Length: 313
Image (tube, rainbow, N blue to C red):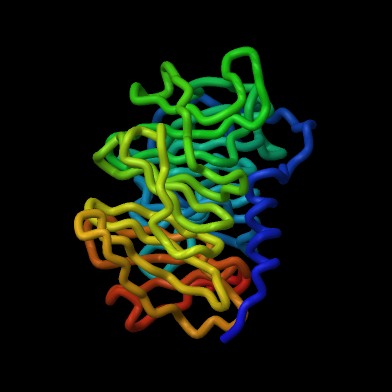
């Protein structure tokens, strides 16, 4: 099973550099998408396909949430649902124990500023809380710890409140400080933060997986050389995809520093783009470069197809 490296390289660069919406947005009422409203909302049955996913994770919606260019889609109890709110074009997305951190551009039915800056919210709540940089920055490369909510991000363009380069925040986004990020290569695709250790952060690059244990000051490559993606931490493991001559999916044991292969589904010319691990049970979800998604409850021995090239299964 051979794979072309150019496909992942191109998609990875699109993930970081390309915007999926224009500068103009239409203003509508808050019932469509506003920053107000405090009650829980019910998920609705999803219609259509899922396109341009820029992150997956287990949020307050309980099922696995997919952040797409037109909102949040949720796979839960063998059904596809979607939020009636938050219909934005997400370029940065991180699930947390309480909900999610997001960045990107407002959707056509949104009254939010463009770009979104850094926002915090819940899938099942209507409002988003603006933390910083609203109307100034759009963060494609961003990682947030699932429990500690430590934030790491790359600002690619300077604004009035944040210089270019890598920054971190350990107070929920109130303040940011620059980090050195020594030994990181230029072509990066993803960041992931350990759920409880705020000083442990990983980066997926064109040349492999890089790990820092000193809050992003220095990084060390922990994988073989290859194009990395699909980063997800658990308490003692780091999951990642790697594309060399063929696609693979692996775990790095944080204590023993050993790597174990996880069998992938028979998905042909494809590779892992994102992954997410359920915080309470043996459930692992992957989303692929070709827009498909699979779930396993036995570390890859068997896989269930839930999405095929954007079409719900």
